[in-house]
Amino acid sequence: MDGKLIFILLLNGIGLLEVILGVPLFLEKIPPNGLYGFRTEKTLSNPEIWYKVNKYSARDLIIGGLATVAVSIGLLIFRNKLEDYLCFAVFLVIVNLCPAIAIIRGLMYLKKI
Image (tube, rainbow, N blue to C red; front, side, top):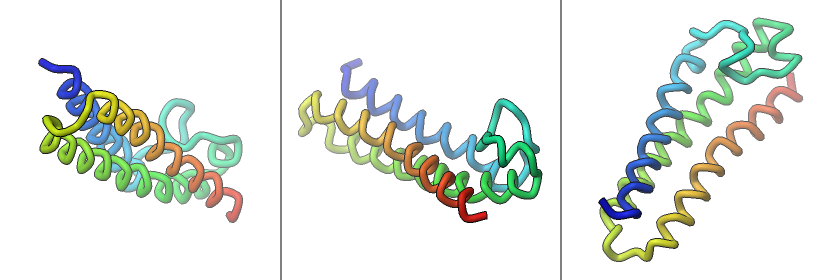
């Protein structure tokens, strides 16, 4: 198995994991806890805030996960035309960018409420 294919499959798995982790938060199935969710002092102190912020940021996490899967499919289709370093660069960017956007937007939303 070549290196590009490993990165592409890993990218796909990370995207699917983001979706799987985001759905229960979006559906408000995860109560405040110290392990899983958008954990800040403010969210942990108030269940109403916890559910609002987690639903908001989970939506971004799910969208980011779906975008990650879409990018991995695109890389899979065009992997023979792409250089190894480009696949790795796309992997690094998308794996870091999607969760970062969800965190930043979640913090901005938290400030508003």
